[in-house]
Length: 112
Length: 114
Image (tube, rainbow over all chains, first blue to last red):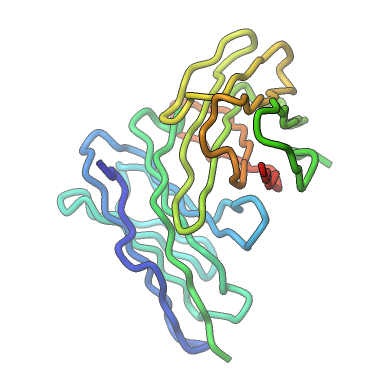
């Protein structure tokens, strides 16, 4: 039973445009969410977080939106750059960061 | 220069042998974690430790063992009982708190068992 889903295995976007990566979850107890970026054969790098008391968090080109009623979060990257090409994982925790459940990832390709 | 180190980067073993993967952190984090990643899949939790001398099984602990004798170190042993040990193994650490905390990851160890 997959508690965190990323239904798009891959996404291609033109350089300079917006990338929108989606994540859905089933456990209503999740209260803290993270997005990670991962290059092949490397460890994931933390990008941005959001807690359930917020519906939006911004950090530079990255914005995460949380819709609790829909159990859905999304990561917006504006503008997209070729260096953003990587696999993006969302992760959710039900106890404020003690243990996370990871989604399967979405591979983003930013085309020049 | 704080961070998490995992060694070695690549590891090759024969079937039936136990192998231990190293994970060290100098971030002064209380919690440490081991994940496994298989092609096309997300990260799956093997074991985690919230404090020295204590650890808990994750979702896929069978065939693995860990120890947490020091705050900085959380080695993972892949035993011969693990049926599909070939994978990319990631170690992480964090300081969970009331306001939440992200996990920081090491560079990973790719284990190949033949």
